[in-house]
Image 1 (cartoon, one colour):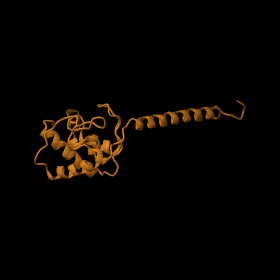
Image 2 (cartoon, helix red, strand yellow):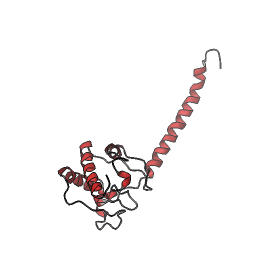
Image 3 (cartoon, one colour):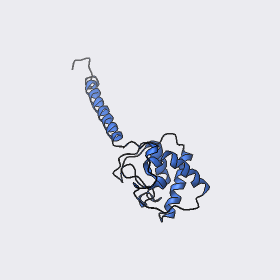
Amino acid sequence: MNARQSKGETMKPMSIGVLAIVIAAGSFAAVKWSAQTPPPPAANTVESDGSDALVEITVPQDLSANAVTGRAIFENACVACHGENAVGRDGYAPPLVHRIYEPSHHGDEAFQIAAARGVRSHHWPFGNMAPVEGLTRGDVAMVITYIRELQRANGIN
């Protein structure tokens, strides 16, 4: 170090190198994380007979108006992965009518965050969930109402 260089100036190249390594590692982790999420099947490949369903449930006959709206949104945005009536799909996504998703463990805001930002896999071996494009908080609230009514009908409170 010469008389004109300060200690901070000699550290600049090292700091840039460390920053580059951190950015590269973060990029690798992001790519690896997104690569673990299986792509959803095409909408026309969803099996309606429930043969790949992960749980059997009772579907309530009388849904509230908000739950009926939520079911329509769910069928458009969520069914390809989570299956009809949220029973899960083997190899794609978990059942939402399951005690793991009871309100005391996964509150409504957890569903909002998962739809908006995606979520890392932490209870199931399906990989990470990508964000769901095009849904508003109001749409997700209706889906939550539908899921909660399905859960209650199956003893999950």
